[in-house]
Length: 145
Image 1 (cartoon, rainbow, N blue to C red):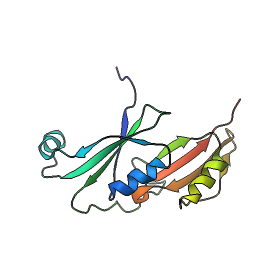
Image 2: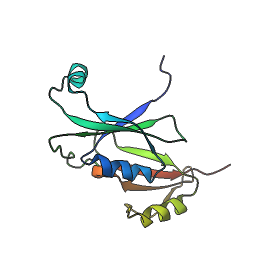
Image 3: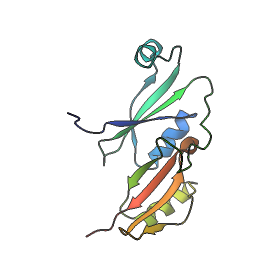
């Protein structure tokens, strides 16, 4: 039986920049280390991969984020942040005051793909933005009963 969702793994080109970005969302650092090359090879079949990782935790969620940076200059896939691509599309954060969060993030240089929109079927307010290496993120404020 599956107990819960545990973590989301994101490969980035600049671990420090990605860690700093997610700290804007309230994530704090957990374990960090260099990747164990032989263990990674035995687990994934990727031989010789070197790099480092950091786990990030948020007090409001049991889901953590693992950021990995591989040595060797990997580049993001073309179109990674486009909403119509097959595969993982975006990571969404629930917020209590979307307007305030957007204003706060803009003060830190974060830019957004549009203005805040309201999905008329549910009344949910949402906005999209790009995170490290072009990954697509969503901020959503759900109506209160």
